[in-house]
Length: 277
Image (tube, rainbow, N blue to C red; front, side, top):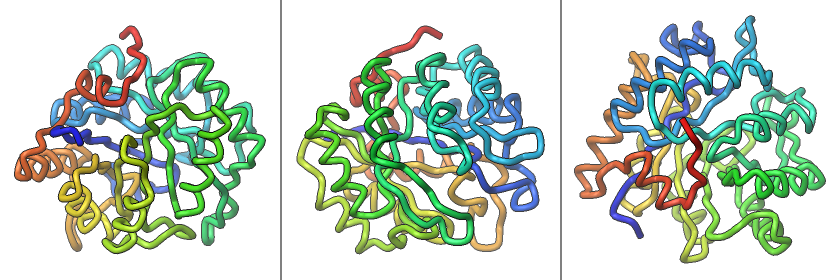
């Protein structure tokens, strides 16, 4: 177990709007400015979603290109690009930005589920095989997003097929509508499934944010924060910025003697392919 904590900030997501929190960044320039502030506050990874001009989730390569360019002009934060930013996207539009922009990390959602009222979250086995091979070919590290235990076991299949390299990097997602609920007991269960050499991070959505954050730190995991997952900083109080979430995670990580990792320390921990800024 490393004595450093990797803090990921998920600034935007595909669903929250300015009606939910007026401080959420939606445009490429807003997202880039927000990520820069989070980097200054101590975030090592930025997990990025894009929005179209109406504020809806999109996999538009032009939005990704503009945002990534603006961020790389400002700082050396590790970029983690979503492959699931639009439930209506095609397999091609979910992957093409990885080939052109070559981020160090990208999400790999290891299974399908009902996204409650929002529709079906489809990650067909054929798509996951294509995505895994494309990530290997372009030296993009998969962040295996696990919304329930079945997705973890799916990941073992793709590891066995040599479509995911080890040691694997897992992100436990607790509290998504249709996924495993955000309880400490569920986090302990998911953590118990991992092989010894795996890297892992976790977050809770909404009211599950703080219990999962604090338990993850106590268990030696890495953490994710941000308005994609929770627009409230505390009960009844909207977050003023994503950097506010990062600053709290930094304080808590320092309290348990696991100082926040820098972007370069994160690259070393996760054996990432460094990209030119």
